Length: 431
Ligand SMILES: [Zn+2]
Ligand SMILES: [Zn+2]
Figure (tube, rainbow, N blue to C red):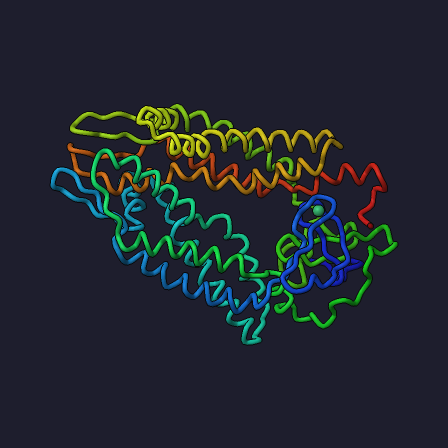
Protein backbone atom coordinates (compact mmCIF):
# COMPACT_ATOMS: atom_id res chain seq x y z
CA UNK A 1 0.00 0.00 0.00
CA UNK A 2 1.44 3.35 -1.04
CA UNK A 3 0.68 6.55 0.82
CA UNK A 4 -1.66 8.78 -1.18
CA UNK A 5 -0.37 12.23 -2.12
CA UNK A 6 -3.02 13.98 -0.05
CA UNK A 7 -4.70 12.27 2.90
CA UNK A 8 -6.17 13.93 5.92
CA UNK A 9 -9.32 13.10 7.87
CA UNK A 10 -11.60 16.04 8.66
CA UNK A 11 -13.69 15.60 11.79
CA UNK A 12 -15.49 18.91 11.35
CA UNK A 13 -17.55 17.70 8.38
CA UNK A 14 -20.04 14.89 7.96
CA UNK A 15 -20.85 13.10 4.71
CA UNK A 16 -24.43 11.99 4.09
CA UNK A 17 -24.57 8.18 3.96
CA UNK A 18 -27.26 8.09 1.26
CA UNK A 19 -26.35 10.97 -1.07
CA UNK A 20 -22.75 11.92 -0.26
CA UNK A 21 -23.47 15.61 0.44
CA UNK A 22 -21.05 17.30 2.87
CA UNK A 23 -22.15 19.28 5.89
CA UNK A 24 -20.37 21.16 8.61
CA UNK A 25 -20.77 19.25 11.86
CA UNK A 26 -22.51 21.12 14.63
CA UNK A 27 -23.38 19.88 18.10
CA UNK A 28 -27.02 18.75 17.72
CA UNK A 29 -27.65 19.29 21.43
CA UNK A 30 -29.23 16.84 23.86
CA UNK A 31 -31.67 14.34 22.32
CA UNK A 32 -31.74 16.01 18.91
CA UNK A 33 -31.15 14.78 15.38
CA UNK A 34 -29.85 16.32 12.18
CA UNK A 35 -31.27 15.28 8.80
CA UNK A 36 -29.83 15.73 5.33
CA UNK A 37 -31.87 18.54 3.67
CA UNK A 38 -31.14 17.08 0.23
CA UNK A 39 -32.19 13.41 0.57
CA UNK A 40 -33.75 13.22 4.04
CA UNK A 41 -31.28 10.68 5.52
CA UNK A 42 -30.42 10.88 9.20
CA UNK A 43 -26.97 12.51 9.46
CA UNK A 44 -26.37 12.17 13.19
CA UNK A 45 -28.25 12.34 16.44
CA UNK A 46 -27.47 12.59 20.09
CA UNK A 47 -29.07 10.68 22.94
CA UNK A 48 -28.57 11.37 26.63
CA UNK A 49 -26.60 8.78 28.60
CA UNK A 50 -26.50 6.63 25.47
CA UNK A 51 -23.65 4.21 26.20
CA UNK A 52 -24.61 3.44 29.79
CA UNK A 53 -28.28 2.76 29.01
CA UNK A 54 -27.53 0.69 25.94
CA UNK A 55 -24.93 -1.36 27.84
CA UNK A 56 -27.42 -2.25 30.59
CA UNK A 57 -30.13 -3.20 28.11
CA UNK A 58 -27.71 -5.40 26.14
CA UNK A 59 -26.59 -7.15 29.36
CA UNK A 60 -30.22 -7.93 30.21
CA UNK A 61 -30.79 -9.12 26.62
CA UNK A 62 -27.85 -11.55 26.92
CA UNK A 63 -29.41 -13.18 29.99
CA UNK A 64 -32.71 -13.69 28.15
CA UNK A 65 -30.93 -15.02 25.05
CA UNK A 66 -29.33 -17.74 27.19
CA UNK A 67 -32.70 -18.54 28.86
CA UNK A 68 -34.46 -18.66 25.48
CA UNK A 69 -32.01 -21.35 24.37
CA UNK A 70 -32.22 -23.48 27.51
CA UNK A 71 -35.96 -23.91 28.03
CA UNK A 72 -38.48 -25.59 25.70
CA UNK A 73 -39.92 -23.24 23.11
CA UNK A 74 -43.27 -24.84 22.23
CA UNK A 75 -45.10 -28.15 22.67
CA UNK A 76 -47.32 -29.71 20.01
CA UNK A 77 -50.07 -32.02 21.29
CA UNK A 78 -52.15 -34.33 19.09
CA UNK A 79 -54.00 -37.60 19.71
CA UNK A 80 -52.40 -38.07 23.12
CA UNK A 81 -48.90 -37.64 21.74
CA UNK A 82 -46.72 -34.61 22.20
CA UNK A 83 -43.64 -33.13 20.61
CA UNK A 84 -41.51 -30.51 22.34
CA UNK A 85 -39.25 -28.14 20.44
CA UNK A 86 -36.47 -25.74 21.39
CA UNK A 87 -35.20 -22.68 19.54
CA UNK A 88 -32.70 -24.72 17.50
CA UNK A 89 -34.82 -27.87 16.91
CA UNK A 90 -35.72 -26.59 13.43
CA UNK A 91 -32.04 -26.20 12.60
CA UNK A 92 -31.31 -29.82 13.60
CA UNK A 93 -34.28 -31.12 11.57
CA UNK A 94 -33.28 -29.14 8.46
CA UNK A 95 -29.79 -30.56 8.81
CA UNK A 96 -31.06 -34.15 9.26
CA UNK A 97 -33.18 -33.79 6.10
CA UNK A 98 -30.11 -32.76 4.10
CA UNK A 99 -31.12 -29.10 3.83
CA UNK A 100 -27.91 -27.84 5.43
CA UNK A 101 -27.94 -24.40 3.72
CA UNK A 102 -31.30 -23.72 5.39
CA UNK A 103 -30.04 -25.13 8.69
CA UNK A 104 -27.03 -22.81 8.55
CA UNK A 105 -29.15 -19.80 7.61
CA UNK A 106 -31.68 -20.27 10.44
CA UNK A 107 -28.92 -20.98 12.98
CA UNK A 108 -27.00 -17.84 11.94
CA UNK A 109 -30.00 -15.52 11.79
CA UNK A 110 -31.73 -16.57 15.00
CA UNK A 111 -28.98 -17.70 17.38
CA UNK A 112 -25.35 -17.24 16.33
CA UNK A 113 -25.35 -13.71 14.87
CA UNK A 114 -27.61 -12.28 17.63
CA UNK A 115 -25.34 -13.90 20.26
CA UNK A 116 -22.07 -12.64 18.74
CA UNK A 117 -23.62 -9.20 18.15
CA UNK A 118 -24.89 -8.84 21.75
CA UNK A 119 -21.62 -10.07 23.29
CA UNK A 120 -19.44 -7.84 21.11
CA UNK A 121 -21.68 -4.82 21.73
CA UNK A 122 -21.37 -5.40 25.50
CA UNK A 123 -17.60 -5.75 25.17
CA UNK A 124 -17.16 -2.57 23.11
CA UNK A 125 -19.53 -0.45 25.22
CA UNK A 126 -18.01 -1.64 28.52
CA UNK A 127 -14.46 -0.91 27.32
CA UNK A 128 -15.50 2.51 26.01
CA UNK A 129 -17.27 3.24 29.29
CA UNK A 130 -14.05 2.49 31.20
CA UNK A 131 -12.04 4.65 28.84
CA UNK A 132 -10.06 1.80 27.28
CA UNK A 133 -10.08 2.45 23.56
CA UNK A 134 -7.97 0.43 21.18
CA UNK A 135 -7.88 0.03 17.42
CA UNK A 136 -9.30 -3.47 17.79
CA UNK A 137 -12.43 -2.12 19.50
CA UNK A 138 -13.07 0.11 16.47
CA UNK A 139 -12.78 -2.93 14.18
CA UNK A 140 -15.22 -4.93 16.34
CA UNK A 141 -17.68 -2.03 16.40
CA UNK A 142 -17.46 -1.83 12.60
CA UNK A 143 -18.41 -5.52 12.30
CA UNK A 144 -21.38 -5.06 14.65
CA UNK A 145 -22.90 -2.73 12.04
CA UNK A 146 -22.29 -5.38 9.35
CA UNK A 147 -24.06 -8.04 11.43
CA UNK A 148 -27.09 -5.87 12.11
CA UNK A 149 -29.40 -6.81 9.17
CA UNK A 150 -28.57 -10.54 9.59
CA UNK A 151 -29.79 -10.81 13.16
CA UNK A 152 -33.45 -11.64 12.49
CA UNK A 153 -35.03 -12.55 15.79
CA UNK A 154 -38.04 -10.26 15.34
CA UNK A 155 -38.71 -11.80 11.92
CA UNK A 156 -38.46 -15.25 13.54
CA UNK A 157 -41.07 -14.22 16.10
CA UNK A 158 -43.52 -13.40 13.29
CA UNK A 159 -42.73 -16.82 11.80
CA UNK A 160 -43.63 -18.34 15.18
CA UNK A 161 -46.94 -16.47 15.12
CA UNK A 162 -47.80 -17.72 11.62
CA UNK A 163 -46.85 -21.28 12.60
CA UNK A 164 -49.04 -21.17 15.72
CA UNK A 165 -52.08 -19.93 13.79
CA UNK A 166 -51.54 -22.54 11.05
CA UNK A 167 -51.42 -25.36 13.60
CA UNK A 168 -54.22 -24.08 15.81
CA UNK A 169 -57.01 -25.97 14.03
CA UNK A 170 -54.92 -29.14 13.76
CA UNK A 171 -53.65 -29.61 17.30
CA UNK A 172 -53.03 -28.02 20.69
CA UNK A 173 -50.00 -25.77 21.01
CA UNK A 174 -48.49 -24.93 24.38
CA UNK A 175 -46.12 -22.01 24.78
CA UNK A 176 -42.88 -22.81 26.60
CA UNK A 177 -40.81 -20.59 28.92
CA UNK A 178 -38.31 -19.96 26.14
CA UNK A 179 -40.95 -18.31 23.95
CA UNK A 180 -41.67 -15.69 26.61
CA UNK A 181 -37.94 -15.16 27.21
CA UNK A 182 -37.55 -14.72 23.45
CA UNK A 183 -40.24 -11.99 23.37
CA UNK A 184 -38.61 -10.13 26.29
CA UNK A 185 -35.21 -10.50 24.58
CA UNK A 186 -36.51 -8.86 21.39
CA UNK A 187 -38.00 -5.93 23.34
CA UNK A 188 -34.78 -5.43 25.36
CA UNK A 189 -32.64 -5.59 22.26
CA UNK A 190 -34.80 -3.11 20.33
CA UNK A 191 -34.60 -0.72 23.31
CA UNK A 192 -30.83 -1.25 23.59
CA UNK A 193 -30.28 -0.56 19.91
CA UNK A 194 -32.44 2.54 19.83
CA UNK A 195 -30.74 3.90 22.98
CA UNK A 196 -27.32 3.69 21.32
CA UNK A 197 -25.79 6.67 19.56
CA UNK A 198 -23.08 5.15 17.31
CA UNK A 199 -21.63 8.63 16.69
CA UNK A 200 -20.77 8.94 20.37
CA UNK A 201 -19.05 5.53 20.39
CA UNK A 202 -17.04 6.48 17.29
CA UNK A 203 -16.07 9.78 18.89
CA UNK A 204 -14.84 8.03 22.03
CA UNK A 205 -13.01 5.36 20.01
CA UNK A 206 -11.32 8.07 17.98
CA UNK A 207 -7.83 8.37 19.38
CA UNK A 208 -7.41 11.78 17.82
CA UNK A 209 -10.74 13.15 18.86
CA UNK A 210 -8.95 16.18 20.29
CA UNK A 211 -8.59 17.32 16.67
CA UNK A 212 -12.36 17.49 16.28
CA UNK A 213 -13.42 20.81 14.90
CA UNK A 214 -10.07 21.72 13.43
CA UNK A 215 -9.20 21.32 9.78
CA UNK A 216 -11.03 22.88 6.84
CA UNK A 217 -14.80 22.94 7.07
CA UNK A 218 -15.21 22.98 3.32
CA UNK A 219 -13.73 20.92 0.57
CA UNK A 220 -10.32 22.30 -0.29
CA UNK A 221 -10.04 24.30 -3.53
CA UNK A 222 -7.67 21.69 -4.93
CA UNK A 223 -9.69 19.86 -7.60
CA UNK A 224 -7.45 16.81 -7.37
CA UNK A 225 -8.77 16.10 -3.87
CA UNK A 226 -12.05 14.41 -3.00
CA UNK A 227 -13.85 13.80 0.29
CA UNK A 228 -14.19 10.04 0.93
CA UNK A 229 -16.94 9.36 3.45
CA UNK A 230 -16.26 6.11 5.36
CA UNK A 231 -19.11 3.57 4.85
CA UNK A 232 -18.67 2.19 8.35
CA UNK A 233 -18.01 5.05 10.74
CA UNK A 234 -18.81 8.12 8.60
CA UNK A 235 -15.43 9.85 9.05
CA UNK A 236 -14.62 12.04 6.03
CA UNK A 237 -11.09 11.74 4.66
CA UNK A 238 -9.74 14.02 1.91
CA UNK A 239 -7.79 11.96 -0.56
CA UNK A 240 -6.15 12.42 -3.89
CA UNK A 241 -8.57 11.44 -6.69
CA UNK A 242 -6.22 8.67 -7.78
CA UNK A 243 -5.74 7.33 -4.24
CA UNK A 244 -8.51 4.72 -4.44
CA UNK A 245 -6.30 2.34 -6.42
CA UNK A 246 -3.96 2.03 -3.42
CA UNK A 247 -6.85 0.77 -1.18
CA UNK A 248 -6.65 3.46 1.51
CA UNK A 249 -8.05 2.70 4.97
CA UNK A 250 -10.13 4.80 7.32
CA UNK A 251 -7.98 6.19 10.11
CA UNK A 252 -10.68 5.74 12.70
CA UNK A 253 -12.29 2.33 12.04
CA UNK A 254 -9.82 0.65 9.68
CA UNK A 255 -12.44 0.05 6.95
CA UNK A 256 -11.44 0.34 3.29
CA UNK A 257 -12.28 3.74 1.80
CA UNK A 258 -14.12 3.90 -1.50
CA UNK A 259 -15.25 6.96 -3.39
CA UNK A 260 -18.28 4.87 -4.39
CA UNK A 261 -18.81 1.18 -3.63
CA UNK A 262 -16.56 -0.83 -5.99
CA UNK A 263 -18.30 -2.00 -9.21
CA UNK A 264 -21.60 -1.30 -7.51
CA UNK A 265 -23.75 -1.44 -10.68
CA UNK A 266 -22.24 -4.60 -12.18
CA UNK A 267 -22.32 -6.49 -8.89
CA UNK A 268 -25.88 -5.44 -8.07
CA UNK A 269 -27.05 -6.43 -11.57
CA UNK A 270 -25.43 -9.87 -11.25
CA UNK A 271 -27.20 -10.43 -7.92
CA UNK A 272 -30.58 -9.11 -9.13
CA UNK A 273 -30.51 -11.36 -12.22
CA UNK A 274 -29.59 -14.36 -10.03
CA UNK A 275 -32.52 -13.42 -7.79
CA UNK A 276 -34.94 -13.37 -10.77
CA UNK A 277 -33.73 -16.82 -11.89
CA UNK A 278 -34.02 -18.40 -8.42
CA UNK A 279 -37.45 -16.86 -7.95
CA UNK A 280 -38.84 -19.34 -10.53
CA UNK A 281 -38.00 -22.61 -8.68
CA UNK A 282 -38.86 -20.86 -5.39
CA UNK A 283 -42.46 -20.55 -6.62
CA UNK A 284 -42.77 -23.73 -8.70
CA UNK A 285 -41.46 -26.26 -6.18
CA UNK A 286 -43.15 -27.01 -2.86
CA UNK A 287 -41.72 -25.24 0.17
CA UNK A 288 -43.12 -27.93 2.45
CA UNK A 289 -45.28 -31.06 2.51
CA UNK A 290 -47.92 -31.62 5.18
CA UNK A 291 -48.50 -35.35 5.77
CA UNK A 292 -51.71 -35.91 7.73
CA UNK A 293 -52.95 -39.43 8.48
CA UNK A 294 -50.82 -40.88 5.71
CA UNK A 295 -51.83 -38.42 3.00
CA UNK A 296 -49.33 -35.82 1.82
CA UNK A 297 -50.13 -32.40 0.36
CA UNK A 298 -47.22 -30.39 -1.03
CA UNK A 299 -47.49 -26.62 -0.50
CA UNK A 300 -45.96 -23.95 -2.68
CA UNK A 301 -45.71 -20.34 -1.50
CA UNK A 302 -48.92 -19.41 -3.35
CA UNK A 303 -50.92 -22.49 -2.27
CA UNK A 304 -49.93 -21.76 1.34
CA UNK A 305 -51.51 -18.31 1.00
CA UNK A 306 -54.61 -19.79 -0.65
CA UNK A 307 -55.02 -22.30 2.22
CA UNK A 308 -54.95 -19.44 4.70
CA UNK A 309 -57.63 -17.60 2.71
CA UNK A 310 -59.78 -20.76 2.55
CA UNK A 311 -59.46 -21.10 6.33
CA UNK A 312 -60.63 -17.46 6.53
CA UNK A 313 -57.43 -16.35 8.24
CA UNK A 314 -57.39 -13.11 6.30
CA UNK A 315 -54.89 -11.02 8.31
CA UNK A 316 -52.40 -13.87 8.26
CA UNK A 317 -52.97 -14.56 4.55
CA UNK A 318 -52.26 -10.89 3.83
CA UNK A 319 -49.12 -10.93 5.99
CA UNK A 320 -47.71 -14.04 4.30
CA UNK A 321 -48.70 -12.77 0.84
CA UNK A 322 -47.00 -9.44 1.50
CA UNK A 323 -43.82 -10.94 2.99
CA UNK A 324 -43.39 -13.87 0.58
CA UNK A 325 -44.82 -12.60 -2.71
CA UNK A 326 -45.04 -8.79 -2.76
CA UNK A 327 -41.74 -8.01 -1.02
CA UNK A 328 -39.43 -10.24 -3.15
CA UNK A 329 -41.04 -9.06 -6.41
CA UNK A 330 -40.98 -5.42 -5.28
CA UNK A 331 -37.32 -5.75 -4.31
CA UNK A 332 -36.27 -7.31 -7.62
CA UNK A 333 -38.25 -4.79 -9.71
CA UNK A 334 -37.27 -1.85 -7.47
CA UNK A 335 -33.57 -2.71 -7.67
CA UNK A 336 -33.80 -3.16 -11.47
CA UNK A 337 -35.45 0.24 -11.79
CA UNK A 338 -32.79 1.93 -9.59
CA UNK A 339 -29.98 0.31 -11.56
CA UNK A 340 -31.47 1.30 -14.94
CA UNK A 341 -32.16 4.87 -13.78
CA UNK A 342 -28.57 5.29 -12.56
CA UNK A 343 -27.14 3.82 -15.75
CA UNK A 344 -29.22 6.24 -17.84
CA UNK A 345 -28.06 9.20 -15.70
CA UNK A 346 -31.66 10.01 -14.78
CA UNK A 347 -32.38 13.34 -13.06
CA UNK A 348 -35.94 12.33 -12.20
CA UNK A 349 -36.94 12.68 -8.51
CA UNK A 350 -33.65 11.62 -6.86
CA UNK A 351 -35.12 12.06 -3.38
CA UNK A 352 -37.95 9.60 -4.11
CA UNK A 353 -35.56 7.14 -5.69
CA UNK A 354 -33.39 7.32 -2.55
CA UNK A 355 -36.52 6.65 -0.49
CA UNK A 356 -37.30 3.63 -2.71
CA UNK A 357 -33.78 2.36 -2.04
CA UNK A 358 -34.23 2.74 1.72
CA UNK A 359 -37.53 0.82 1.60
CA UNK A 360 -36.00 -2.00 -0.49
CA UNK A 361 -33.09 -2.24 1.94
CA UNK A 362 -35.28 -2.21 5.06
CA UNK A 363 -38.06 -4.67 4.10
CA UNK A 364 -35.87 -7.41 2.61
CA UNK A 365 -35.29 -9.43 5.77
CA UNK A 366 -39.03 -9.74 6.51
CA UNK A 367 -39.41 -12.21 3.62
CA UNK A 368 -37.71 -14.76 5.87
CA UNK A 369 -41.01 -15.24 7.75
CA UNK A 370 -41.97 -18.26 5.59
CA UNK A 371 -38.58 -19.93 6.03
CA UNK A 372 -38.68 -19.51 9.80
CA UNK A 373 -42.28 -20.74 9.87
CA UNK A 374 -41.23 -23.92 8.03
CA UNK A 375 -38.33 -24.48 10.46
CA UNK A 376 -40.80 -24.29 13.37
CA UNK A 377 -43.41 -26.56 11.73
CA UNK A 378 -40.80 -29.16 10.76
CA UNK A 379 -39.50 -29.30 14.35
CA UNK A 380 -42.95 -29.50 15.95
CA UNK A 381 -44.97 -31.68 13.62
CA UNK A 382 -43.19 -35.03 13.41
CA UNK A 383 -45.63 -37.60 14.68
CA UNK A 384 -44.98 -40.13 11.92
CA UNK A 385 -48.03 -41.01 9.81
CA UNK A 386 -50.45 -39.10 12.09
CA UNK A 387 -48.96 -35.72 11.23
CA UNK A 388 -45.58 -34.80 9.77
CA UNK A 389 -44.34 -31.68 8.00
CA UNK A 390 -41.35 -32.01 5.70
CA UNK A 391 -39.43 -29.12 4.13
CA UNK A 392 -39.31 -28.90 0.32
CA UNK A 393 -36.65 -27.75 -2.15
CA UNK A 394 -38.65 -24.61 -2.96
CA UNK A 395 -37.76 -23.36 0.52
CA UNK A 396 -34.03 -23.44 -0.24
CA UNK A 397 -34.53 -21.47 -3.48
CA UNK A 398 -36.75 -18.98 -1.72
CA UNK A 399 -34.24 -18.44 1.10
CA UNK A 400 -31.55 -17.91 -1.55
CA UNK A 401 -33.72 -15.24 -3.25
CA UNK A 402 -34.11 -13.41 0.08
CA UNK A 403 -30.40 -13.52 0.92
CA UNK A 404 -29.28 -12.58 -2.61
CA UNK A 405 -31.65 -9.60 -2.87
CA UNK A 406 -30.50 -8.41 0.57
CA UNK A 407 -26.88 -8.50 -0.62
CA UNK A 408 -27.90 -6.78 -3.90
CA UNK A 409 -29.41 -3.88 -1.92
CA UNK A 410 -26.27 -3.64 0.23
CA UNK A 411 -24.03 -3.65 -2.86
CA UNK A 412 -25.91 -0.80 -4.52
CA UNK A 413 -24.50 2.64 -3.71
CA UNK A 414 -27.38 5.17 -3.35
CA UNK A 415 -24.93 8.05 -3.85
CA UNK A 416 -24.81 7.07 -7.54
CA UNK A 417 -28.38 8.40 -7.83
CA UNK A 418 -27.08 11.83 -6.84
CA UNK A 419 -23.87 11.78 -8.88
CA UNK A 420 -25.86 12.44 -12.06
CA UNK A 421 -27.30 15.59 -10.45
CA UNK A 422 -23.86 16.89 -9.50
CA UNK A 423 -22.40 16.31 -12.94
CA UNK A 424 -25.07 18.67 -14.25
CA UNK A 425 -24.23 21.48 -11.80
CA UNK A 426 -20.50 21.70 -11.14
CA UNK A 427 -18.97 18.27 -11.62
CA UNK A 428 -17.29 18.45 -8.25
CA UNK A 429 -17.95 17.18 -4.77
CA UNK A 430 -17.29 20.53 -3.07
CA UNK A 431 -20.23 22.19 -1.47
ZN1 LIG B 1 -28.30 13.11 1.92
ZN1 LIG C 1 -14.29 4.59 9.17
